Image (cartoon, rainbow, N blue to C red; front, side, top):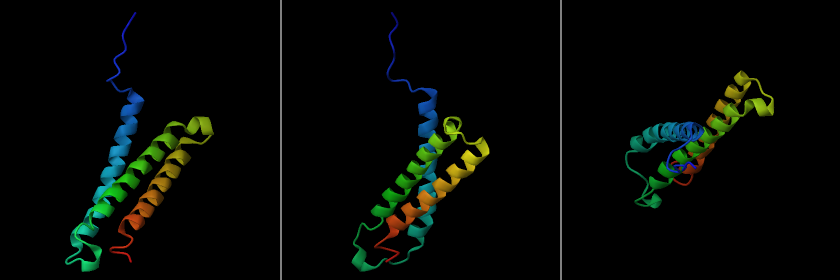
Length: 111
């Protein structure tokens, strides 16, 4: 009888985690110029106003990476051509990242 090592990740899980980390990194790179370019923040926003966009936008990017993974890897089961699946997954990623940016900056920079 062989023992299974539960600490090792399957190749699909590694690909999923990698896509989510890349999506979160893209979200962080997208929101950073907005936050760093703001000279003097509005005093009504509070001291820690940057935390909300720094959490929400990378999280939206990670979810976009998750959607990208599922659409691209399971396109055969849905019946999509691979090119169409890639274009669809990029569109879903961009829309999700845009919505995350709006939600993250709502109430601070975009009032």
